[in-house]
Length: 299
Length: 299
Picture (cartoon, rainbow over the protein chains, first blue to last red):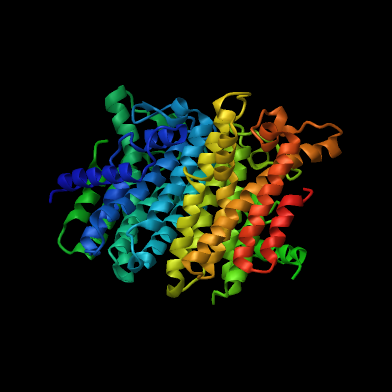
């Protein structure tokens, strides 16, 4: 299967799974949860979990339940976006071209929607795949996600990012701090997505570790590419070379390494990710293609 | 053991467990998490889990790991308080006589602290008691907590409460709606605390159901007593008969049933809870004493 075909099919599976696990529309909280979760997106995290499940499986679990478990990652990712957009955080009014959750549903409901999306993510992971035989995998899945998104992971990275933004110089804006912020803020969840696929597949500990290491490298790669896109996409679209990150004094790979330096970092990260893909799949396959996509996508 | 001795010892166990599972102090996020979690309180939810574990056990699990699992309920309870106090929700500046989390640590950090406390609750439940033999209980524990606090539980109740507050009359202020709000907002977590104890004890499905039913009744009882306390405690302390609930036009048992009617409802709820305690422990013991305490405490 080509990468494009895989991504299209994984996105469709994830979106069907989200429809199955989200609460029915009709009350303000459910509507806010659905609004933000079903607003589109590449569904990259569920796709990574499904890719690793497929490469390391088969798991013996019903496909729809595997897809639901993978979709839990998207619930948690959406929770983080909803809270990130709130006035007390980034105060963003638009996401993916649509008004953000709190703009449409009010701040209090958006806060609760994010909270409930996090809970729903854990509910789904703790209940799929069903059956006593899969209980150890379910407990492992919850544990790895919880570790990835808590104070030592995503939430911790957001707190570090808060502390670093708006400090034009000094100890909070070093390359080491940049790496730590991104590893926690976005890298840990991407890595958890890969590891979740391995856990769902019932893969041995060694493969599980290799999946997490590939995910770590992929996370770095994605972040460098994102930082570069903020500059290069702005240049094309807005006719100027400064992007939103620079305006907000965000700490990025471009602000730390410069444009050329960041391109070199990206190629270095791609090489690392490809090496880890090779350790898992031998001949270049889906995992290698995902690495190339992460490095060179145009949006 | 007397009720008082049990509550004192459960509180001490829960607080020692919280110290073990919370992140070490020293960065803003960890400090905010610790500030709100270690601010005192009765530790009622962990105490309920420990009570049911003890009544229905023994579980064969190390005591400290059972206490950590029970303490996860307090992490989640604290997350809900931190978010509830935020300016976009109840906008409370004081809790338990101390400045609230966002007043001390800032709104963004308080938001993230609540988020990370929720994740930590699931991390703890998914990892204790340790060992392959307890994996099915861990998965069950996560699932029951997630269901209790998501859109169909605590977060859903908070959303209903938001919708009902400030509407002096009409369909949002009926006795039925009052019951639904409290069942979800506070009752489900109390019920989950009792059920968690049964799950940790490895109790059969029937006992687990009975524990949840006792918890449902106890939740109603606690809420009626709370609503009464808001009036009677204010009367004593403030020298007037109107409390905070009435000022905020909150939907309470007193606003729906009147003072005498609410007292009658409380006695009815106590009778139901005592009956369910009898089904579990036969002769009146710890569970009956907890019901009496819930009904007639003075703070």
